[in-house]
View 1: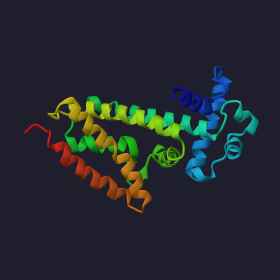
View 2: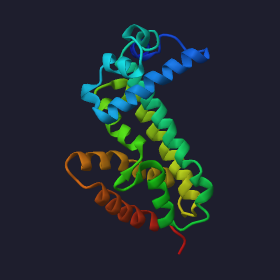
View 3: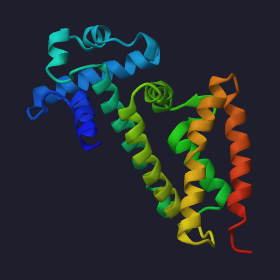
View 4: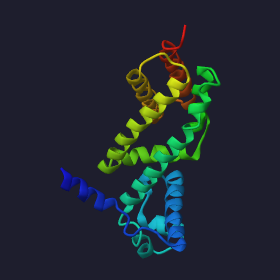
Length: 214
């Protein structure tokens, strides 16, 4: 099992870590180009040739930094997951200042944008979730991220004054984060994003409301 993990990491590991400013700039060009193409053309049409051309470099230059498309997607997914956590951390302090309904609205807007006007990262997310279904490496990092998100959301809920133990708070955090996948599947099946936000907000308010002080 350990050997399999090492082999997987080798497949997606960057060829060289960018230490100089010029190298960092090239890596950013590659990642920016890949994001643009994911938004405009989707995962199905994403190729190393297209990424290199959009980044303004040769495919050979791209391969100096990433061994394959899978490695680029892995780095994009890592960056996106970290951005999600960065977006909601400030809500730990905010949680004690607003009511639960306002807190949930701010939570959704900070991560997804407003219904009908999603964040660019939300558009990227839908394509990265498709990639997650194809690559085991992305599934592994997503499982680690889900656990961390559950803990972070639990901290927010406890700061909001929910009267439950830490384990229940963590379960509530995991339940809340599961909306991400449910929303994606709902919209993929033809559901309206506005309804996904509204119905899940109503459901979550009812569930969390059980643990508010009487």
